[in-house]
Amino acid sequence: KEATSSFVCAVLGNIIFILLVAGLLVWLGVAGAILGIIIAVIILCCIPEVMSIFRLKRLYNDVSPKDVVEENNDEDDVAASEEEAVSSAIYQVWEAWKLNKPTATFTWIFIALEVIFLYLWPLIHMAVLKNAPSTILFLFLGIFSGVRYFLSTSVLLQGIGNFGSIGLREGEALKHKGLLGVKSKREWVAKSRLSQIVGIGNDKSLRFWNMIYTLLVIFFVVVVIGAVATTDKSSTESDGQVKGTSQTLLVSGFAYERQPNLPYPTCRLKKGLEIPGGDGVVDLSDIAFVAGLAYVKMPDSQIMLDQWFGAGVATDNVEVIDDFVTVFPEYSQSAASYKLITFRDTPTFAVVSIRGTATLWDLMADAQLWLSAGLFQGLRELLPLGEVWTPTLHKMVKFVSALEADSTSQVAYYKETTKFVKYLKENTEFTTVQVTGHSLGGGLALITGAQSDVAAVGLSAPNAMLSRETFDPPLTKEQLNTLTLNIVPVGDLIPMLDDKANLFQNIECRADANDIFGCHSSTRSLCEIMYTCGSEGRPVVCNCTADYDYPQPIPTGNQTNFTQACIEAAVKMEVEVVKMESNFTTGGR
Image 1 (cartoon, one colour):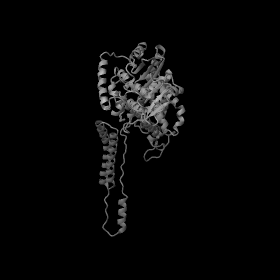
Image 2 (cartoon, rainbow, N blue to C red):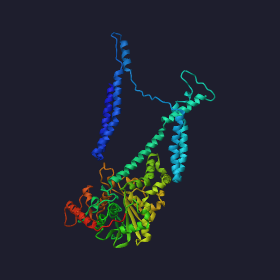
Image 3 (tube, helix red, strand yellow):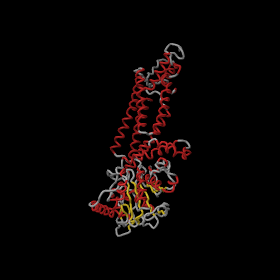
Image 4 (cartoon, rainbow, N blue to C red):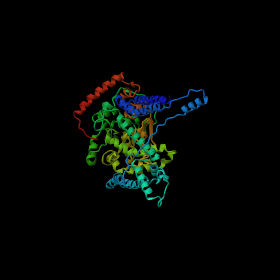
């Protein structure tokens, strides 16, 4: 009965586990084909366990002793027989047999290959690349690891059992010849080398921290890939930009009134930032709109600027960017993408909007710029009293980042955007420049603003406090605390990377609990800001009700049907795009 119940429990347990995983994946909205593949893989992984228990059950049935009770009236004999039957048990034992014993020549060849390919080759490669920090660190770590790998007493003992077994043959007493005897020494060497070859002896703590590190890396990659997959839910073009109609559709004649509850303190900013025409006051919605505009290609972006600010008030200025690339041709093949928004009534003012994660190069920039800070954040959470390390954590992040300085410099988009902002201030008529961006673009905006001494606002941006000394030139706490502002949707994972500076604004997110990356959308954030702070005379975003379940705005004109107005706005947008594309010349970044 026990064997049968164990088999039934194993089957039911695996079924419940599979159903639990399937339910979780359905709750997360995983596509049907992917869901089927994952469940199939889990079933294949569970089958061996179930079959093992089934074979154990059959084995038990085959070898289980039969209760034989002699037909006599001796109660003591019956009791003894029952006691013997009850105490019977079966054990399943696995034994590992070494079928081949490597020769000394093979052992030395194997060790030589390990040293050459796993140590000397990478060391020489890093030295040729003139990566001094990595070369020195790898040199010493290799020496220490080699000593620990080949001479560790605990590892060797796991391979040979214990010191008492060295030189001890079956049926003989331990005899010493010299210290341990020549044969004993040879046996010690052979067994220790063999233990390395077959992989006997693993450090549990090392496996634990390797697992933690791997999980943190997987978490970071999943977060960033999710940000790529859900950035505005747009159909991304090859250059990472989208059509305006697939991202944000604007319609006039409707408005959101400011909510009666206490609004966000930064709904209207009166210091440090400015947008022409605001009488010295900047609406947070204007900044969020311009941050998301970096994803939209021309001429769609110009049409949206005309709808938002008014016809001809703001311009997607590609000419200035083209002039910058002409002066600095090293950026002609750069994967960085940004826009320069200029204003007709304030010719000395401009806003630089930097695009977020949309291409593979963007993904590499995300990983290499913020991976070290993210890993140390995770380590800080795992350690008891981890917060006590915060004052020195940025030094640790700097040290780790220095090891990959060469590769990081290849995807350091902030160098280009910082040089562009400085170029605007020094070589053009623009005396006042501000920087904004979403996601990776927001993180680059925070870095660029601090380095260029201009105001910067990031939307769903990774922060820069822990990694401040990894950039070139490095940032200071004062720069980040006084020049940068990050708009952080509650539940968005990307702004959790790195520690925040003093200035940040949390905003609500209405995404479902199973929509892990839903709060990262710049359009959703724009909708939240407009709904809470009021539209303040700007056109309303149709996506707010169609995609994000916000209430319909109130009409302010002749049109009262918001859905119909959005349909008409979409048709009008398509007509204007076709009209502008006929005389549009590609340019800018």
